[in-house]
Image (cartoon, rainbow, N blue to C red; front, top):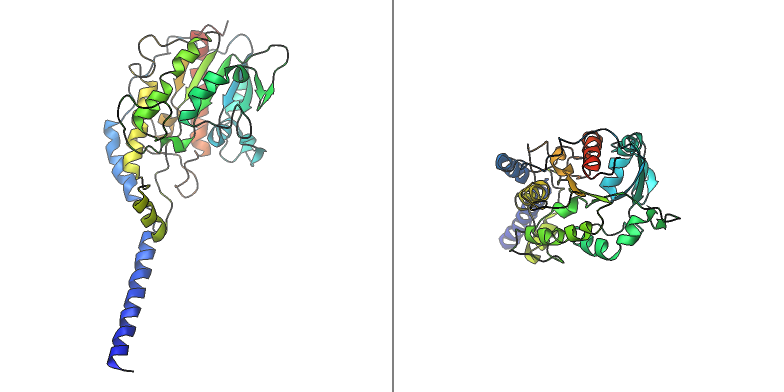
Length: 327
């Protein structure tokens, strides 16, 4: 073999080794970002929320129809712990089941659900709620299950609605006043999408509307090959947790705080349950403390959902009694 050919062979081997090493390194899950974000959490604890402690936590004296509009995380929160038994994210049981449905039924609530594959439940992202409540309120209040309506004029007295964790993958803070139609998932656009919901809810004082904050993102990002990471960066689609996670905390704070979404005489028939805060350890992090899988799945674990279910029922009872529905 000539000296020139030998050098060329060695060069090719060296390039191959470097590429293999680079690929292996880039396939390691990106966890450093989670450490950076966690260090920010001390300044991002929950703001003082609307205080319901002065209202009775006892169950309502009459049975109330409750509709929960959700996708996978809401379905798992409602489900009993057990095998995966359900369809369209409406589960009787699930390995991540929090048992909320059973707790609600024990407290005089008749639980109804709308999720995937229904007009009422299919679209649940931040920018979907305003057109849904503005244009489909009649169908929502009459919903028994999915798109099946009650007979005889029966209506839901409580409507619970929740977006899923991708809605906490904020891209930027954005600029005031924001756009209610998005499409970019920025903090200001999210605020603009929620603000006019209060006017829709004021039209129905006989109904309690319960906003449930979206679950936090998992602390571990799944591994990605080199080509995918480079392509995302080239297209401007990369989004690190150190951007999205603190903005998710800010949005949750704004929704729940007494000087946020519900300030200035917000109607008594609107409350916010901070699912996000429970799952972040009540301000201990801006990322999920109860992820599933290898820590990269943002669906909350059974323990996280159980904790949320335990907190939700007395919260709801107080909100119902404040709204005058529990008589």
